[in-house]
Length: 439
Length: 177
Picture 1 (cartoon, rainbow over the protein chains, first blue to last red):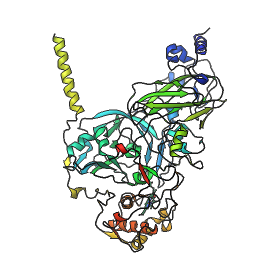
Picture 2: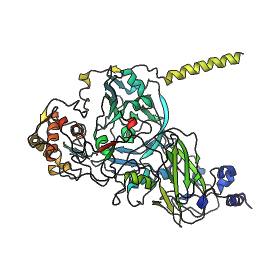
Picture 3: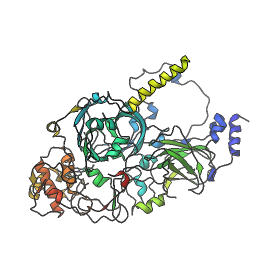
Picture 4: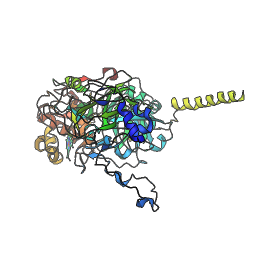
């Protein structure tokens, strides 16, 4: 018996810990590399059959010159964001992260999701200014150069659009990729100056309660932030994953409010007015105020609540036949660290605890993984996350009972409501194709 | 003994460095800025009217500016075109309802603030304060929220009560000052 066959036999003997073949979260690790070698791969394209090995051209001559700024392999050129408005017509542009083609917990800068309400401004960093004024003792102006001399902090943080996962409000499941459904969330290491040190330097007036933050983009996008959040973990972020913040994410500086609604994390931030009342700006008064059943609407839906979804497999990332797979996905919460993720393969009847990739950071992506033996039959995969504050991700029916759903399926790019954090269910059909279902 | 002392010393140095960063002994490099130097940027309008500039405008003035600068995207008489209509709207019932100025916006000041900072879409900040008052008056009057001859200025605009003013629930009261 070859080691490969031996490993497969061992895995076959492992008793599942939950229905439809979910294995203990450390089953593959315990078995070591040989067990991992028995695993099947998810497929985007049919895989080639075995053949005799020979040296290919790239092994027979020196390669290309090393570029000054790295570019990925030309074979990866299809790993891209999807664009809602590629010709920059006068309306909002969305670029969604391809979660099914990435792994780990960081999002590469060029694939971080972007929403720009009127394009990405081309800001000269030497001319950019950040002003703090309003209810302060001394209004101040900062250049990028002066901010670069302040003590900085680095932290992991996801940024999620309040409208991420909006297609899940559809009364019927919309067939689309995890990128189309959940692509408006990404995670980076952000480095910058704690906002508290700049506010303290300006001197906060006793009457101050809010900060109205504004960008240098064409719509001068503005949002109101409670002063307590600004003094807690808010940051003027200058770097994203080690390099300067990307233009789509606010170059040369953005307001980072870890765990809070993406739109509030003002990009290209140029002005912070300390006030005694919220501005009731367009985006908080109108756009990011989700309507509830009955017609009232939520105001100030600040926090992106605990959420998870499975990225591998997911629609468009099919199974290549019965066998061993690793189910994996992303969990995060605006209320702190992820404490637990459970995975089901039988539509929520039985659950297996997923392994969490450490270190688990607060308000950041946590990758979860569960080994799985697929017998080729129909299954429904779900993940459910808990955070350290004790919040549990709701089921879709719980969320719909509280928040409603559409009367008719909307466009996949539409935003019928915001702040969907309920469970996502993937049905796997006999051929290994994955579909979005409500279970 | 020596190693112990060295270790204590190192811990002390580390603590000193760490607390310096942790408690943000900021170098205080911000430069004072005067209200005059800030005036071009100082454009927030708060719901109580704070920030509204001098000037005024009427619906009739606004209709002229609208036809020239807004109708191309928002349609004639603000009935909608490539972009949102700015007039009308059924009462809000569910997430399927279309949010409009008349059925959803809680504060009239948001209209002035948003038009002045973001519109017209391709030339933001190109309108005079008089034009913004006039456009605000025109849109409010089309929606029958003010009379056809009412003038909008820093005193009258914040007093316009929007129909959906009380249509909201605070999602996180403990986080909302």
